[in-house]
Length: 240
Image 1 (spheres, helix red, strand yellow):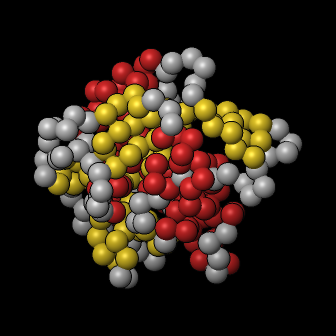
Image 2: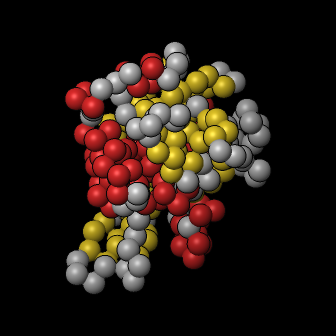
C-alpha cells in the first residue's frame, strides 16, 4: 500500500480529480507535464507499448511511478515519458490509456481523452492551418528517419511538412512528420509506428516536431501527399 504522504504530483491530482468527479483541465494539465512510466513488451522482435483489453477497450498500460508499476505486478520493460508525450504518441491510434490500472489512484482515458491529454498539439477550432514544404531541408531529421523507419515495416512512406497555425491572435510554426501506413495496419501496429517515430524525431529535434498519419489529416491530406517523400519502403522490403 502506498500512503497519501508518498503521492507524486500526478497522483495527488488524480485523487483531487476523483473527489471532484471530473476529468477536467485541472487534472489534465498536471498529467501532461508529469512523467508516466509506460509498459513495453517485445512483439515479433520489436519493442511495442503493452496493450491489454481493459473494460472492453484496447489500452496502453502506464503508471505514475515505477513503485506503482511494481505494485501492480509489472516486471517487464518500462519507458518514462511526460504525459503529453505519451498522449501525442497515441493520438489517432484508437487506443485508450490506462493510468495505474486497477489502482484506486488511477484513471482510464478513452481515445477522446487521449486527444485532450495531448493538449498543445490539438489545433483550436477556428484556427487557419497552412501546410507546405520546409524552407530549409531538415537534414538531421531525415537522416534519423532513414535509420529508424526500415525497422518499422508498417510504414511505407514518410514526408516532412511545415505547418503554420494561425488562431487569430498569433501564429506558430513547426515541422510535421507524416507517416503513410500499409493497408490494413491495425491499432497496435499504428501505436508502435507512432511511438517509434516519435522517439526518433525526439532524438533528432527534441520538442520541435509532431508526428501524424496521412489517413487522419482530412482535407490536408492531399497537400501533404503532394510533398516529396523523404522515406519510401522498397517494394521487396520485409513487411511488403
